[in-house]
Amino acid sequence: MSQGKNKQVIKASIIGITGYTGLETLRLLLAHPHVEIVHLTSRQHENAPIGDVFPHLSHLDLTVSNLDHKTVAKDSDVVFLGLPHKTAQDIVADLHGSVKIIDLSADYRLDDVKTYERYYTGHNHPDLLSEVVYGAPEIVGNDAVAGASTVANPGCFALLGQLMLFPFKGLIESADIVAITGSSGSGKEASEGTHHPVRNHNMKSYNINAHRHIPEITRGAGIEESQLNFVPTSGPFARGIFANAFIKLQADINPLDLAEQAYGEHEFIRLTNSVALANIVGSNYVDLSYVKGENNMIIAQGALDNLVKGASGAAVQNMNLMFGLDPATGLDTLAPVYP
Image 1: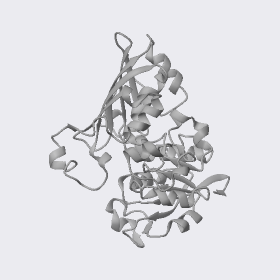
Image 2: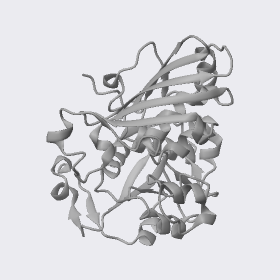
Image 3: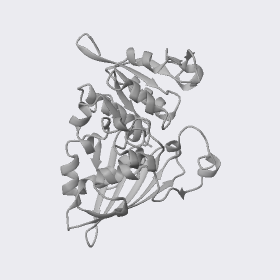
Image 4: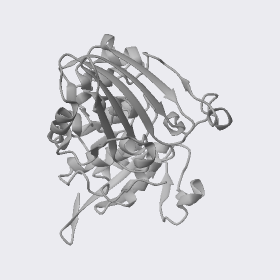
C-alpha cells in the first residue's frame, strides 16, 4: 500500500477477470478513488488488451495476462479471486498471510469442513477454514472484517436471506424463504436452465431445501436447518434477487424496532415500506421491509443486486474495511440504475 500526495493508494489485482464477478469487481474498482489496478489475470488469455476480450472495455489501457498467482500477489496490496468453486482453495492457502485476499468463491465461506463437504466437495485445507473471516460486516461486525487477512465473500442468496432474518436471531421459531434470482446468478456459461429463450418467459424453483447457501443462512440467523424452508427460484431477468420470508417468532415483537437496532449504523441497508428490484439494481444497497402479522408472524421482503451487494460490491466494501477506509468509499456514489 503506497502513499501519494497524502492519498492512500491500494494496489489491487483480480485473478479470474473473465467471469461476471471478476468483471463487476473491475467496474467498481475503476470508480474507486483509492485503487490502482495492477494485474488482471485469466487462464485463457496471455497479454491481451482487455478491449479485445471485452469490447465494452475497449477504452481502457489494461491487459489481461496469465501471470502466476504468486507474482500477482507480490505486486499487490489486495487480490480479488473471481474463480470457480474449488479452484480458489489452493491459491488462498498459498497466499494467505502474504497479501490481503478477498475470495468471491464458496471455498472458505463455511468454517465447518463436514458441512462444507456435504454441500460442496472435499476441502484441501480444512484447517484454514476457521482462519478466513466471513465477509458480511452487517452480520459479523465491521471490526472482524477490518482485522482480516483473508475474507470469504458471502453467497448472494445467503447474504440476502441472512440480512432478512438476522435482526431476530435467537427469537426465530421457523422461517420460510422464497427467493427469485436473475440469470446472472448462474454465471457466464450458458446451460439448459439459464438459456435465454427458456428463461425469458419462465419461472421455476430448484434445489428446494438443498441449496448450498442454506448453511450460511442458518448460521447467520442462529437457527437449525430444520427450522428453515428455502425455495430458490429462477426469474426472467438478468440482475437482482427478490425474496419473501415468512418468519415465526417466539414472542410478540415489533420487527422494525429490532431491524433498526441491527442496521442503524450500516449505510447500505435501507428499511423501506416496499421493496422492488428496480430500486436497487446496479447499487450496493439492500432494501428490506417488515410487516407484522398475526400469531407472532413477520412477513419480510428483501432485494439486492446479486452482482453488486451479492458479490463484487460486498467485496469492495470488505476491502475498504481491511484498509481502514470508510466502508462506503467508492460505493456510495453508485446509485441504482433506474428504470
